[in-house]
Image (cartoon, rainbow, N blue to C red):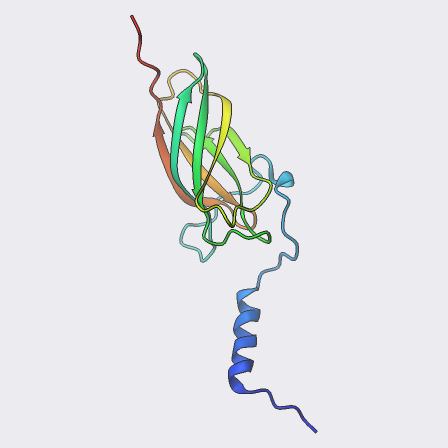
Length: 153
């Protein structure tokens, strides 16, 4: 006797299988992605990325700064999450990276900090970009103007 599967259930199975597609079978820990191994994916692709939605900076001393960066990730789960953000000069040089080692599914958007970031003389603006475990760097970036503290003289 053959088992009949209702058409609606067959369609649901097909859609779920397609939505879970991709060739990656295990989530990344994020640790092996330190640095710039992942390149940005075309922003027009169907891949999802975290967005940098806010950033605050403080100058620590003559050469170092602390960054407080807020990310928003619509798909943040233990299986796939925003696993880093980085600070870039206008020419694309990386000044610092903050690796995120777990998901923030119950904390969206979320803010994490990075201190001791050295900013070369003459750099007045930087951009901050997020990284997805699967797709790499992409999503909305955030531009920050660097203003030294006001003189007390």
